[in-house]
Amino acid sequence: MPYEQADLGAVLNQDLALLKHAQVGVRQPGLTHFVVPSEEIRIINMHHTLEGFLGGDPSALPGGAMTG
Image 1 (tube, rainbow, N blue to C red):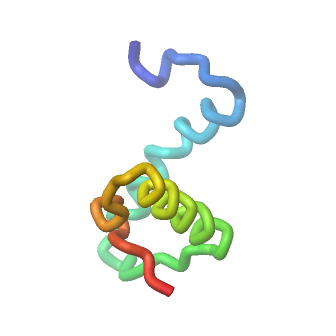
Image 2: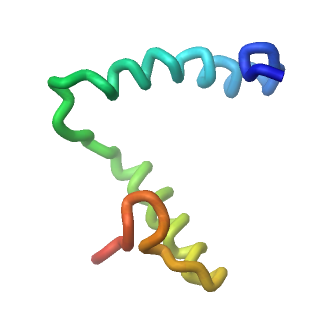
Image 3: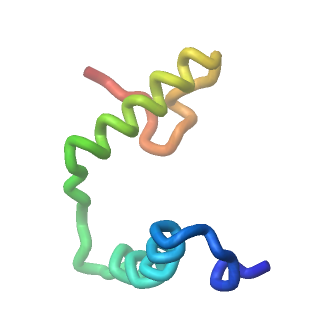
């Protein structure tokens, strides 16, 4: 089933509808870097920490190993 036809709830349906537009923006030649809010950095760090606890290699995750 294509994701456009799936009913994932109001929030996820809205996120998926906006995703195509966000991806187009990311591919613009003028975009040279992202500013990541501190809330997102906390989530990324949590994922790296959990991966380490589970015996995985945090550097294999997107973004590589966290430092600091």
